[in-house]
Amino acid sequence: MSRPGRADRRAGITTLLVIAKEPVPGLVKTRLTPEYSPEEAAAVAEAALADTLETVLRLPAHRRLLVLEGRPGPWLPESGFEVVPQAGGGLDERLAAAFAACSGPSLLIGMDTPQLTERHLAPALSPGAWERADAWFGPSEDGGFWALGMAAPDPDLVRGVPMSTPHTGRLQRARLVDAGLRVGDLEPLRDVDTPRDAAAVAALVPDSRFGEAVGDCRTGARR
Image (cartoon, rainbow, N blue to C red; front, side, top):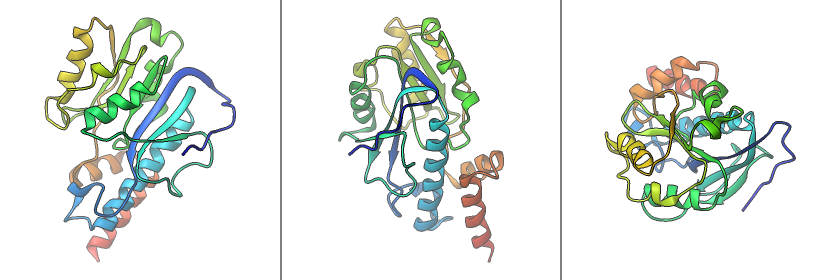
C-alpha cells in the first residue's frame, strides 16, 4: 500500500524512513503498563508516531517511507509518505529489509523519539552531509540508537546486530566503523520505553500531541 505525496517543496537527496508499529492496544508500548492501561499506552504511541511523521514531513527528502507493521490509520498524513510493510523476523532483519528497499543516501528513524526536531537531523541532511560522512548515527540514552543512515545502504551492516540490549548502539556503530565507513554522530536522544521515559520526554515537548497524550493519561490516573 502506498500514499504518495505531491512534489516536495524542499527536495533533498536522502530517503527518509520511519519504522513503526500500528498503535494497537496491547501490542505497542507494553512497558508502559501497568501504570498506563493498554488503551492509554496505544494513545501515547499514536501521538508519538503522529509527531514523528509531522516532523519528517518538514525535512528535505528525496522520498519518505513509512515502514509499517500493521495498517495505516488516521494518524498518517494525507500525503507525503509511501507506506510499505515491514518484513518478518527480528528487528535487525526488519531494519535490513528496509534498507534493502532503498538506493542512494538513506536515513532511518523510529517512532520512540517524539521530541525529535529538524535541528536533531540537520547535520545529516545539510548540504554536503554525505560528502563528510558515509554513515550517520544517532545514539539513544539507553544504549540503543534512534537514527541510522548510510550513503550506500548495505543490509549486511545491520543484519546480525543484537537489538534491544544496552550494547546495541555501540555494536551497531562499531559495525559501520569496521566496514571502513566514516561515521557522523548525531545528538543522543531518550527513547520512550517506560513511564519514566514518557514523563521526561513529555516535559521537553509539553504542547505536542505526545506531551498532551501523556498529560491526559497522568491526569486520568490521579482521578
